[in-house]
Structure formats: structure tokens, C-alpha cells
Image (tube, rainbow, N blue to C red):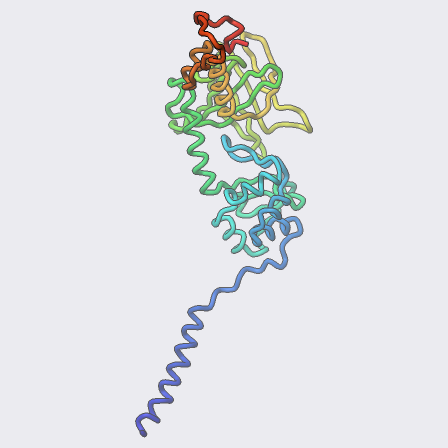
Length: 323
């Protein structure tokens, strides 16, 4: 009995010590302080901390650009649906683990996090989102491969899509690609007439480079060929509500082409539909019936006495899908 009395205090002490050790091991480090967020940052940061797609969508200036060929987000309705794709676990953790002091104001550019790696905020709203989620990167890889595969075979190897624009006056389409193989990037401008086969050779092809200027890295593309044609284009250098334009000099004649952004794959799909429609129009009615697996209409058997049926006639123009 004496032995038991001596052991019990030891066991009790060990038990208390064990609880303390376990308690210390299970104790989490304190969460960063988010009580003093800058006013401009607060709507965005709190929406992400709360994981609220609706609140986040309300704190964005639209349209919000995404890297081509992912489509830009036009409004808050689209953003609510796109939120799980854009705001992934890594982004949420970055915002959650960043104390208020890590949000930085950079002059007229507004507020940012991670030296501009993630986003830019002005007046309580996101106006630039440089962060690309893992899901978006997968989308980019897939869309880029799909788009390049639609070009003429001689234009595919080693090239990656950069952007696509359309002439606002006559519908001509221009695309810019980058040669991602060479150490010094080479850019290619290809032009297609509005009615041209987009999977064929373009009517215009120039090569050049990209220059950036200023703290906002405004882009200026310069293209030329060996016979004196050249083109210059900046999608960023826009004043007020002016329309960006390709400044082109061809055969000594200067031309200004107003353009707006578009998506190459949308035009490829439209082109495919037009081809299918033209093929359908060229089919006669019998061919369509055969393709659809339909049977010709049955003969009428209502008459009391048998009558001769008229011989089958070749469909006239009015009977076909031409009309």
C-alpha cells in the first residue's frame, strides 16, 4: 500500500505534464491581424477571407482581363460563377496569412499585395488581376494548343497565341503569336480577310518584337517584312474612350485600322458552321432524307379501286433545301 501511495503522485505529475505538452503541441500560431486593413483594400480582402463569391464579385471593376485565350470576365454574374476557378487555395492562403502591413500602396497605381504579383486595387475595387490560378493555367495550356492546331500546318510549330483582334470596319481578323522556342522572342502578325479560310495561309504576315514603356509596362508591338511593309500596334496606349488601332504601312501607303479584341476560336467555330451550312444547301432532298435515315412518305390506300401511281420525278429547285 505504501508503494501505491508513492506511485500515485508520480503518475499524477506525469499526467499533468503530458497534458501540458500535448496542449503546447496542438496550439496554433496566432492568425495575422486583419483589424486594420486599409480602407481601399478592406472590401476585397474581407470578401476573400469570408470566401464570399458575391462579395468578391462586387469588389471588381469590369471587364476583368484574363490571359488570352481565356475570355475576360464581363460582369459580376460571370464572376460569381468563375470565382472558384480564379480564387484558389493558394490565393486564399496568401491573403489570410498576410498581415495588414503587407498591403502596399504604390502611388497612383493603388494598392497591391506581393509586389504586384497578385492584384491591383483602386478605390476599393480590383482593376488588374495578375494572379493565374492552377486551374487557369491548365485552361491556358489546353486553349493555346487547340488554337494553334487550327492554323495552317506551316504556322504551328513553336508558336503560342498572344492575342486576336478584329477590324471594326470590315471584319478582317489579325492575330499575334510568339515564337516561344528562341531565346529572343519573335512575334508574328498574321492578317486574314473577313471571308478567308482561317485555317489557310493569311494574306498578311509580318514579324517583329515587343517593347514596354513606363511603370505600367505599356506594350508596343513593331512588325515588318523584307519588302518595306510594316505595322505598329499597342493594345494599352489608349486615351479616354479612343479605339486602339493598327498603324500599317503597305506598299508605301499608310493606313489606320481600328480594332477591338476578339477570340480566334469563336471565329473558327463560326467558320465551321458556315461551311456546314453551305454543304447542306448543296444537298438535294433525297440525299438529306438518306442521311437522316428517314423513309419516303407512304402511298395513300384510301381509294376504292387501284390506280396507277405517277412515276417518281427528280426534285426541282423549289423542292430542294436551296429554298
